[in-house]
Image (cartoon, rainbow, N blue to C red; front, side, top):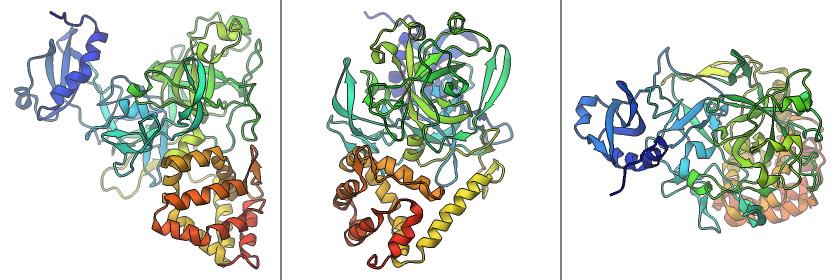
Amino acid sequence: MTSAPATTAEWRQLLPRARELLRALPGVRDVGLGVTPTDSTSLVWRVYVRDDRDAVGHAVPVRLLGLPTHVVTAPASRQTADAPFVMAGASIETNHGKKPGSLGGFARDRNGNPVLVTCSHVLFPGFKIIDDLAVYTPHYSSCCFNGVRIGRPVYDRNVKAQPTELDEWVGGYHNGTWTGGFNWIPAKVRVMGTAVNGHASEVDCATARLDPGVRFHNAWQVDLGGSTTTIPIKGAVTDGLGIVKGPPLGTLPSREQYVRVYNAVNGTLRFGTMLSNTLAEPDVGDPDRLIMKVGNSDDSDHGRGMKASVNQFMILPRPSPIPGQSLSDSYRNGEELTFEGGDSGSFVINHENLVIAMIIRAGPISEYIKLDRSALEFSSIRNLGVATPIGKILDHLQVTIPAAEQGWSGTVPSAGTPSPVLLRGPASAAELARRRTAEELRRHLRTSVLGRLLLGKIQQHRSEVRRLLSSVREVTSAWHTLQGPRFHHHCVTGAERPGHPVPHSINGVGRAQLAGVMLPLLIRHAGPPLRRDLERYGRLLTEALLTVDTLQDVPGALARPGSRS
């Protein structure tokens, strides 16, 4: 006869099975492992129900898998003046999750709705979705009855995932799973300590739409030495990586070299510096060689809802800086210098309080530092932080982090409210200048036949092109291999900043080579309307644009004699 589990950890391993059995009963919303209000020493299955506990309780067994059950009414999402107030870095968990992760912060989606941003594997553990999937803080299955719903994860069953060479799926919905928070590009991936050819994702990200009435603030509330300090998240870097490499060994970091990470799961404010891959080739967009181009993977990835990751920052944990303290003394303060699984989803900010990245995993230092680790900076480290540059996340999710000196804040409108009630000031002078520059470019384009054609076709086909670039494996692979995202970044920057040069080549790849490969690929995979326009106008527009130096040269190039439809 098999003995019953003896520890909380062992009972938690049975939680997925208990959820599966009890969710099949009418009225059961979810199941957690906790205690009863009258006995804080004995574990029970806490069975959360939608209706009155007496009406539903008759269908719930008294014991399940050897543990008593306790029926409680699930806390409803409050939408009144006492609605939850959520800050960046909060501990969050879904009603389908096994452990909490971190809420990175808040952003605005394409429709202007406030959403929370975190890792895909935090919102979709095991890649799985359920019909009533929701996000709670601090914990859904809290024994203290304090799990409060704050939103619903965003996914779309109509966006179909694509099969990979490993018989997995990526980029959308497939058979009850969601992998829309990942892409899939060719990469060297570390397997058993050796880098082998394979594929990996540059992102592990997702959003959740906040519930009506939820109040939010892009700021960290940190307990430092017994006093509470608020650290505002002032926005996200929009140009470059927003950080420089760490100092040479034996040297204290400067203010500009530090990054900070906070989340309420572990309750700590961590400092760190960026590792640099000195063996990598220098890059125009990454002169310090901070982006690690070899992928990271772990045997537990699939079960957690993760993919092998590539093109990430590596963050070395550092002692909290204390003015006047030497490097050697700082390592005697007794701080635990490591990143942990609960850090997943945490934003990383620089000295200007701008988001530069998001933590997606923690990795043993022995996996990444193969040289002598006897140096003071390495000897007491357990795990490094692996983090995705924020620009890749914002592009993939199509969201923006509004700039605000005290951190963007607001209240999600109730149903029927015509517009969000957001605590924001007017656009900054810099933002207004960027908008004027972009509108001026559009005005000049409207003066020629080809310019008007280009504007119209961009508006008509933008969504389909984005889908092809992010979810069709052949197109995605070529786009990244041929430096497409970097060319695109310079084009976007050039549309907002007059005179910004768009490189004719990046890492040895020229514009003509990129266009020559991508145009046939897009034609092959496009739907009929886009395919027809690419076949008719694609080469004509490409030839007119290959010679320009800045975006402001485009209207003239399209208006030249010979550049007409």
